[in-house]
Image (tube, rainbow over all chains, first blue to last red; front, side, top):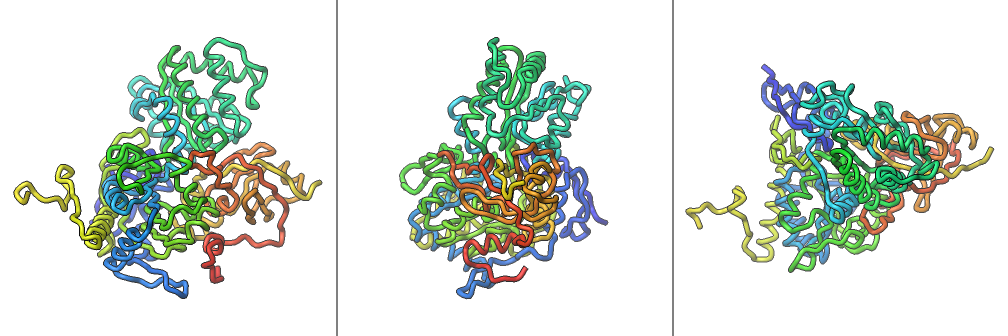
Length: 457
Length: 137
């Protein structure tokens, strides 16, 4: 009998839904059906059974074609390439678990690498603003139970986080929000009439790239001053109406997305959004949250901050200490200045999502991809190492967009012989230690599988 | 009527793109979801094209052939949108204002009709850029 597995986590967007139900075949190998997942999540669960998935590492040959090699050979090549490089760049981690992120840190430290994650091209500017101005945030549970005025600023959850609005932000009925959507005022700020804007009570169709001006107008009105007849393409009356709704709210929630971080202003847009949150708090309660893109992209920020003190753009090449300086140690900037001599793409697809010029620069040197699937990065790599799919074939800790850790489950067995990210990075680290004739360091406090037991010590 | 028009480009996520991406970036679905530019019908009129016509989009860093479609989510005149992914990143400027984040949104592009040009596949664009493309589909 096929079996329903419940409370499964979905490895797609930052909403990290953990209420998915998956029907698994008798032999525990194939996913037959899913419940509760959005169209994208559903696609991920079904895709793991695809016959096209590579099951062995593939090495590019001089004629440009791939040849299958063993995992031992792939580990050896990666270890040697990393050791030979003066400044390798290890980038990605949008789609893997915290165990893998922790394991790669050991490799990066040994290699003297730059360690960066997808936040670098996504919510990196939000980090900069948060360092400068703080982060008065809350959990998504509080949003569901309390928020009665919700702002979506430069984000479009109906497309990028499909179940966000039904689980947390618009539709659900919570402890103090018993009437659900009826009780919530939705304000959307976007240059397009997105599907999220269509759900909003007030849509301010801002002139693209003028977010800072509009934030400033909101702050000015909240502080009781006058504003011009039009700001950022929005009429004064509309701004006053929106601010009035905000002041009347009992709990105001601001969600912001790539509309703030990808355009002119970058961190300054987020900085003033945080200041606006502070201003609203002198009238009512308010909180703010970044719409993180992937199910565990908050993870590397947590794990690496704990290990090195910085969330992304970590330069470990000095060997004695970590340092972080976006613009200098960020992946795209390093690539454009030709400063790295090996690129490792892990659990993401830089090939499709970096500006093509950055890829042209990175491809001049060894290019290694670690990813379960065939993607653009894998197809231009010198070496592609497939791993198990986290959340489907591999359990692990993930951090939701509100930085709440969730234990994800494994629902089916992975392809035989294919390691997890963590196992792969441990093997690469061990091989690097062998090659440099040093002792690997495993931390017993982490209950690492390879750490010596108390008796052995 | 002009033969080209300058628009403000944004490249962001769409659910069609997300779903197709998880199916695979070499699939027909991904090609159809992402090799399009959404622009206001008024802007199409200005350069004398119908919807579903191929156009050349050129930015400060490069150009790409995509299909002009009517926006699935309303785009005002002057604004254009290519869904994030391989085609968008052919024209996204890598400048980061010292934050690490490229200019994915809010950069000027020139759009002109390219009725007889073929839209390249994702693999041809990416492998072609690094000298690995060997032809085929």
